[in-house]
Length: 121
Image (tube, rainbow, N blue to C red):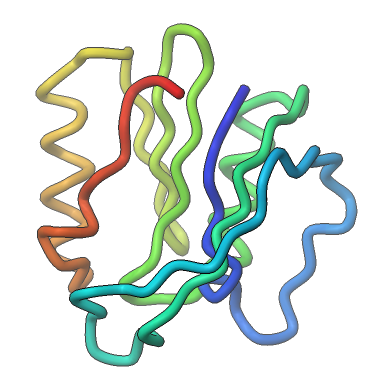
């Protein structure tokens, strides 16, 4: 399972030490259209893990800051888009499922340009 986590999306004081994540890459990027309260640069952690996707999604939903942040990851057949207190799960390629997650993201103040999660690597 692969995903991307924005380090700045974690609530202050949050910790994910009990989940074994393998960091594939770590990079800093400028954000062209940050939402109100978001920094203008992010630290992106591309990761992979063998943790059960439901467990990972539940744990991430507990530590993400709100509003305006999410983390996405996918298995071979499903996509997970996780917000603070809310998880969207849909089959790869399911436009209705993706649209529901995107609509929720918009309602949480995520700019259109940040609705760029994919269904695969």
